[in-house]
Image (cartoon, rainbow, N blue to C red; front, side):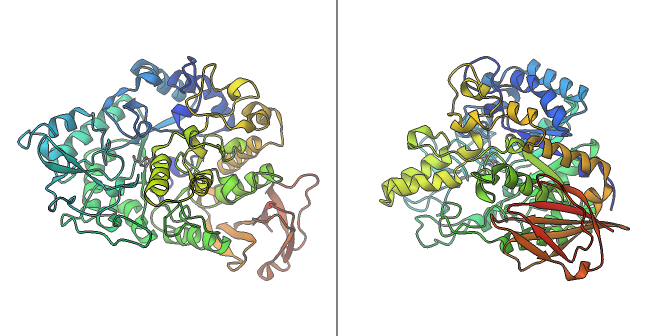
Length: 561
Ligand code: NOJ
């Protein structure tokens, strides 16, 4: 397997709106990020993935872009961006930008022209269709509730928006669209950025037949997913983008890909196919869902989590490369979801970090994960900002007559604002995020959970992440070793090995609040020295790995002798 810098890197995601506010307007900004680069340097990360900082009316917090080559006023200026890039590079940190090109904002100049008349040269930059009688062209449901089509009076046609009404989908069948996107990408790469995280990039090729989707029980609209995810020309488009743009630079790429399977993941990321470096799949994020997707709260099983992650590890072992993540700006906080955010918050946050970072792939840390930030539960729907949650609330309460309290409970568990509450820097006012009024309330637990406390405490989650990053840098087996799952049927322990030539690591993670014993017959007679653990107090090497006791939420990694 070819060695690459992006395989050896750890990426840190910044959601600028919630990271650090430098001017007291309650909104995080680029100068605020610059102030915290030394903090990130201390953590030891190699790459920052910056969620969108482009000019945007903020219907979806910057994932609706009005101008790809301008910076959002609230975040600063292009000069600020250039300083950020330079200051990051001075510290040996690379910057990867979000590339949102499945759709633009409806305020983007292309769309303004496109909707102005049927014969405007930009008409075909978007997907316009006639309705079926008084119905939209298909029955597809938008990711943010309601139909994916909006009727436009001016020309009497509908345009497609898989996300909000203010996020019309670009028409990638149009060569001029592709060329304009590639030129824009080159403009940023020539500035010196180090790659792209590509927003829902497997949605850019739509099934040209536009069939109706199946209407699942409890739903008003049809599921169009299979007609716009991993569509017929997706590999052609990505290969073209690679040849026209990416192959000309030494950069990293990661494609966000809801609905991608391991087989597809291999096609997207195998070196010789010249598409992308890695993908974000959603299979492990989707566990515990149900009829209403993520809004159905079902219990999840460790065996299911292991089987999904292992399937991806095996599929991309020879060809391709995995991304590793528990969190991002769209997901609830992992310590609240798969750990225990009360009694065992620190312990379980470290266990989850171990479990993920010891796998094969490039790990991503989402801001606040490194200090064990948790979900938030606001009492009132008015305290939430995310349009996905607000639209869902309105639909379930108004159209389906559901109890507002139970809908709110789903938002507590699964809503995206869990990840978006401001970063907790210290125990001062607003957690040190802003001197003004934060755009979204700070999680009230900032007095206890904050970066200052974590940096000062050598046993903190922060120092544990730092150690994980250091170990990756000094042990090739962590980066390139083969992954093999053990104890497949255990609902309590996630166990696996990583093997590179004669080096072997044994990773044991207890996902429960009870003591567990790992029975490892295959390791009888082998001893292990402790490589890493979240155990407090004295840590002893194992004379025989046949049987290993694990305390609640304990993680131990042994070097097998
Ligand atoms: C995925 C992004 O991560 C999410 O935040 C956004 O709402 C949608 N794509 C639409 O851009």
